[in-house]
Length: 475
Image 1 (cartoon, rainbow, N blue to C red):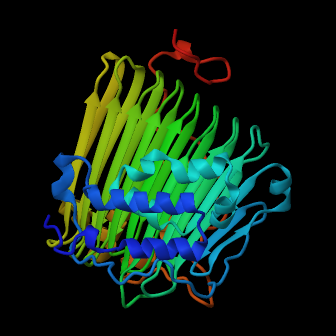
Image 2: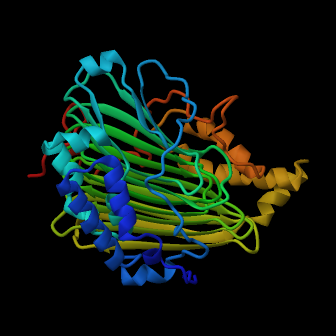
Image 3: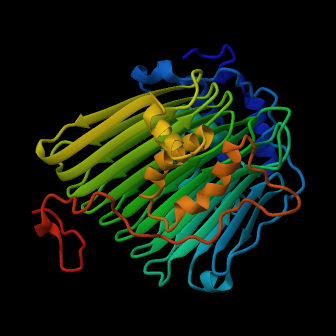
């Protein structure tokens, strides 16, 4: 893939970082952190791994006219679902709805102005984490961050917690740069959705940057769902990371439907016995869109499970790159790891590349497998449906939906396939998902965490299980 002559280092100037800092009233230590992050952004390569640098793709991207300090009027609020936390990020700032019963139960939600005023441990965690300057687009997020969420759920919160977090691009040359820290306490369940929309097409490119850190305590279930459906001029960068505690489960779910250029990087460390990570991604691209995804799951604890499944559908001149790495650290025991990357091409001009990788540094009771393919739609399947009276376009659509449903049906969210059908239907018909000033809004309905695990009884040693079904430390 060719690299654009307009490189990422030309998109922004340090003066823009200072403008954002001035507009938000940063204290001096935060201002310094921003400039340090911007210096790292300028120096770091677009891809850390030299083996993958040929896959970097920025053709047509030019964010030189972006104004990260731009402000504007608030967009229309979606309905608030009873018992749920609602967050809306737009040109006006961040609006938060936190039900009284959740606030009284000890749940806290802090936004960027509150973190800037804080000066406490949470604020230091947010602004000083060293990895914020370790990857190019993570560093860009740290330099320009203008929206934030720091969520804490106390230990043993009695009911599942649902958070709906919506970002809406509404101004040309706008940049929404959001960072989220999630801290679910011990023995809690959290379902968090990140939704990205636009109010309509934009004559200029604009930026959405998202950084997510999940720091779960022991015995937690956390599901993070992203629905990415902005307009076709949006350039988006996603950095998501987690390190699991004992018996902690984390589910990353990605549904990408739109946007001009989208780059995502997910890094998960399963750091303690009994940890599980599921990383499930679906992508639909058409016209000249490009999606670049990197998933890394590191097994650093015994008796752990990691699974990454990515499926993409591309038509017209769209292109996708899917890179996965399942890493098993030395001396790690009783590990099951699975990586799957598959793409379906619906047009001759569409392209996709799949680059799976396994790095197995332990030989003690380890099972690691992967599968990968890039191919056009199977003409025999289309012919079979046509022979049953189904027109070819409808047959193609049915096969495509079933291809993506393979991932969505495995997600630990109840009825996710049906929930995501409307935006997929719009995109298939050539329309965009629009956040309008009137009429129905495309935000997600109420959701619930469903069952985990699509690999059956995957653990190597059932003696590591106690009577409650939780894992015990290895001897």
